[in-house]
Length: 161
Image (cartoon, rainbow, N blue to C red; front, side):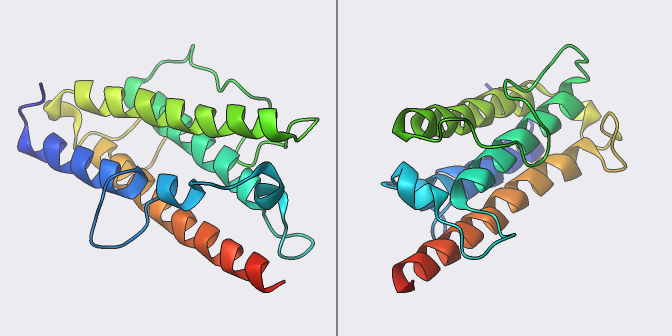
């Protein structure tokens, strides 16, 4: 059990941004609820990201923050690419379910890393980052919320297309 109140607060913010109820509205996981792979593939315009790409991007950055917190050079993202990993081939319903599960797993693993982080390291600079460990944790929660809003907007645009 986590006893440091600062880490408890960071975990609460992290959870609210991903899959817990919060005053701000729909978190990232909620924005994905019920989406089919076809809906996830819809692109608002050429050169714009679709929801599936956003899912892979958010999973990748959860991995990066976990790597920064743990300083584990052996960690590797389970998909090829970085930042905006390419979509799988074929991009079908089965692959969509795998990539949504990948996001959930990366969230779970990062949450474990946050809970295990010694409170004495919160203010320390994260590995290969200009920001502190605490800023990386808060930042990844903010990242989830940004992309949750983006997904909600893409869904609205898709309904109007």
